[in-house]
Amino acid sequence: MPHDTPLIATIVAGLGLAFVFGAIANRFRIPPLVGYLIAGVLVGPNTPGFVADAGLANELAEIGVILLMFGVGLHFSLKDLLSVRAIAVPGAIVQIGFATALGAILAWMLGWSMGAGLVFGLALSVASTVVLLRALQERRLIETERGRIAVGWLIVEDLAMVLALVLLPALAGVLGGQQQVEAHSSLLPASYGIWGVVGVTLAKVAAFVVVMLVVGRRVIPWILHYVAHTGSRELFRLAVLAIALGVAFGAAKLFGVSLALGAFFAGMIMSESELSHRAAEESLPLRDAFSVLFFVSVGMLFDPFSLISNGWPVLATLAIIVIGKSLAAFVIVVAFRYPIPTALMISASLAQIGEFSFILAELGVGLKLLPEQGRDLILAGAILSIVLNPLMFLAVDWMKPWLERRAGKTAPLDEAKPIGPATEPGQLASVAAPVKEDGPPPRTALTGHSILVGYGRVGSLVGASLKEAALPFLVIEDADKTLAKLRDDGTETVSGNAANSEVFAAANPEGAKRLILAIPNAFEAGQIVLRARAANPKINVIARAHSDAEVEHLKGLGADTVIMGEREIARGIVEVVLGHKPEAAEPSAA
Image 1 (tube, rainbow, N blue to C red):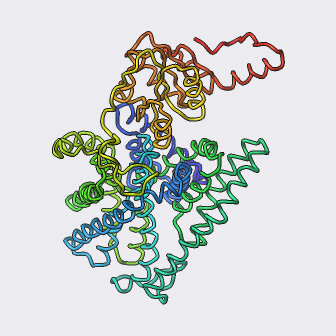
Image 2 (image 1 turned 90 degrees about the horizontal axis):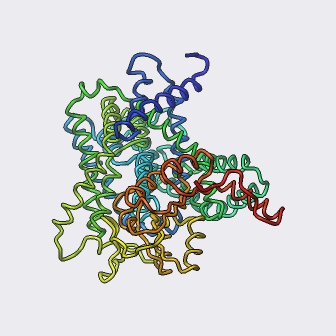
Image 3 (image 1 turned 120 degrees about the vertical axis):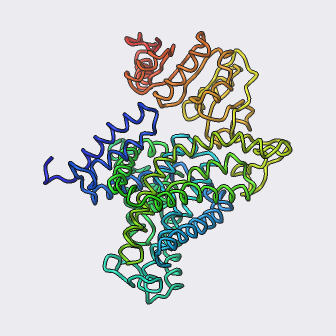
């Protein structure tokens, strides 16, 4: 491996090994991120063989965090954020306080100082942006109410950590550490005083928000529209990345806001443009690649032998992260009269730590507040909690029925679910019309109907035509806003991911006449085709594709007709030119 190209070596080794071990993990039905972490351990300094550049890996991982938060912002509006403020703000603050207290108690038991306990506890209190968002995306929960609460909770945690990063250097002398270090000379000086530092920090955050809402709301959409009118896809993709990275970097340098929060606000402002969907598609490949490098960089920091040298402290740290934080979040969400499924999902989402924890640990060690053993425990807790996080979601699925039975039959759990953005946060849904948020959806009574999967740009056009033709159909969709609109229009819906067996069964595929797959993801569509064929061999399956390879993939799995957009556009153009429909050399129908 050449020594004069550390950047290329780090990217090749990180992505290459991540692919190999991610594929192995997927083969054994283990989350791929476990494979990514193992890849990081293998290229890290604590194992023999090639050692990647940890500094470069961390910077590449930071790009992944920026792009991931930018993507979340694209699917998140200011209205969504404000709609969950009543639970996200107090919930995050109380949970941070509880986890910090547990960490401080463990630090006291280990003989550390009060300052060490504070830094250690704060590091254990904040969840990983990447892990939480990946978990929500895999379960397609980002646009649901539960997803909005989790993301809002995460934003409040990030804001609290930004404040902590500014305050710690100023308080280091009082807490028994080094007052100021060269590495953090860019932070606010201690001469401002504690309240002065807090005031300046809040003022900077407020200034950033104002600039984004006043200036960014006008400039960012204008840039996108200008570039879109050039007709250059390359320039549009470049504009999206430049805005995401530029706003994040400017927010950190000019306003002291974290890179992740800056990117989130950039995405949220861009979401107001009608080009936001295209922007999300263009940035998706880079988001995925760099988020993989994040997990690799975390694995590089982990010393497997620390599990032996720090046995019981590692277990205690893990218990605080996985059990302590989860219980605190569960109690808080239930106290706000949200349903048990929501409380369980939030608890599982927060039962891990990540990037902010590493930053706090490094700052604490640099300020002579946190011993190096504390940093090792934080790293071990992060690795183990990230690996265990998928199991937490499985545990949630197992615990939910038991908790629902314990809750009794007098008040169904989902009846306490606060309804969507149209109401004030915390307002309760009518008991006469409870909104089911989880559990098996009710089975439709329709027969001889069409099952329309997805109601985006393509699905909505198909649905409108089916409705105009008075053909019976129902829609399987998982976006709360879309579901609410469909219900208002009187269209029957099934909430959830059609790849889920219970969700798909609720659409009565055995009695359906046709299945229309309007979703753009061919791999997910393939799973649904297999499920439909198993339930009803005679069902007529119509799907969409973006390439010849996807057409062949879906046909091979049993789709009757696969429509490729580019081919149909070409046929439409030829029809206009020739005045009649052309004979297709390669028909879409199987």
